[in-house]
Length: 592
Image (cartoon, rainbow, N blue to C red):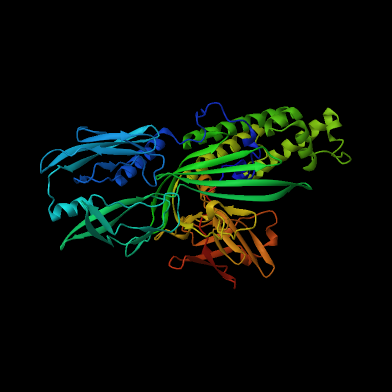
């Protein structure tokens, strides 16, 4: 869903082919970090990361007589950017010894046969935000004799589950099978607490696989010593996969000249925010990048992700929905004003102002579009007289005005200014609706593949396409139970398709124009026809819109009925004269 200049060409089929070549408008401020989330989103993400890390932070909370140090973590598996510092409320019993590489609690057992209590506090730091977690430590005194139950509880306090935070696919983790407490061996066996597709357990070997969201898990440990047993639950979090990177390299032609282009798609997950950045390196065009930020929630068992766009990135700026609408509205206003200027004074300078072109490029475009008279060649176009150049620009203005007049059904008495104002009002509505549509919430079915064979659009990988680290992410819009065929999130081109035949409903245009429209084409046995269509109120039929070459479409092919079969995700269209076709749902896929 790239926010693009050519949207303005499509809107009404008429306008603003190069509108977005102008500079970013000054009324939208640039952020100091051009690729950072908004403060609110970033704060939410940091808070969630800290809470998840805090939940995973565990330490041994029972210290027996034979132990004079305890290990205190300064980082947590899966949370590499979270740092931890420690403090003690009773340094005469536990003293903190921390440096850049490690942290230990130095234990001084007191005289007596009981135990002492010490509170240790961990301060977790992530991107400038902090949270704390406290642990109540039981430190047995020098002459204390532990009961069997106390030995089991002391052993349970030493249990932990860790995994390799740099591995995303399936990995095996060997769990503790025994714990030593005061030279006494405590046996440990493990069992699952609940079923989760991201975890399997075989004896003391746990296998886990990560996903696009943090997954809180736990295992049940049964500890046994001298005929007695003790059960405890050991929680841990499988942290989300932080990013998926896809690159493609291909050759395209400008005229007869080949150019190489490389595009990199980065899908970056941060627990509750997904950022998509698309970076394009090109030998011919200037370097480009754009992207989106989505808030997201994921059901990692059902493999669905709910995405709501919150920001769009272009021209080194992140835009909210309102800022993006203001941006396009300002450009649309500028374009229409420039066109009025061009209509009143059709000079090559005003044409360049409208199109954002150099004079050299303007001459070429006007020449190739046939606005210069016969006899003028590409090599001589720039040397033509001012009168010839002005006449070419005037032809461009007249042709454009006439095209707009026909598209809007305006009378011959409508003035140029009235026609341009009509274009502005229509395209303003379409800008608003198009952006509202892009910023809506959509549920996708997603796939994380650790042996990818397809690109993000479910096409087989070519030799010039690759996923970094051999791990891929792809998504397509989920089927919405109970919704009609036209309410589904289908592909923007050929949303319902089968064997060369397709039907599409244009949601945005229909809202703007006030009637239900779409596109239809039929291509079977060398019999091709189609075009824009109008639906009836309940979407049970459609008719092809009249057009200039209307006689090329047989009368029997101009009106079709629609029968929906939501169970099988299909619709059946028929012209009542022998042509019938089942069309199937093609979900929206591209996140770009």
